[in-house]
Image (cartoon, one colour):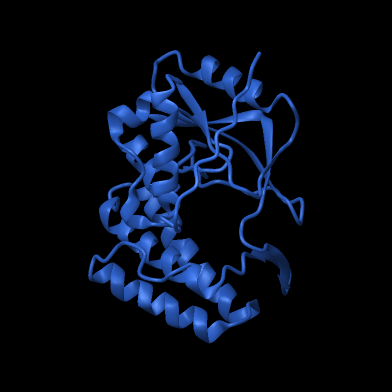
Length: 239
């Protein structure tokens, strides 16, 4: 079996959504039927990763409605499991781009990643769009990906132990803006909407309690709220 590695260099930072779409376009042009996406800092658990993803896809796709297969995510620094948003009955509501397996026909049906988001919540928007169209997000239980979600740290408040991601202030702008833009668009997706409302509140508390650069982060969160209200997308802040 022959493997070919192709490096595509962009002249500047076009944003994660555009980069993903360039890769999808190249994969389609080569006649590929599926794609697996990885971040630069993610590491597969073993050599059977792709086989495990394919096995789950083939087993769960009898109805032809599986759009995304995700692995089990483990934080690289702490070793803690990174949970994905789920409904009360255990259905996955969203996915993370890194490590995910997507049949390329889904992009032909639903369109590519939303480039107006630039970075952050690009994977969430695609997940929500897939579920709105009746597709499923499923987990491959034997596929493990070691992934970094910010700079995860553990903290204790009384008897409660919690984690905080310590995303920098620029990322806080994009996370806030894009989260609120999607909450406006997908507000009818109540399980996800309630999950995000709760997550937004908890993240604000964590920033105030345990993170550094509080003032810069809170200022950029406020800027993200304003731009979401004005329906502004795009780069806005250079990364």
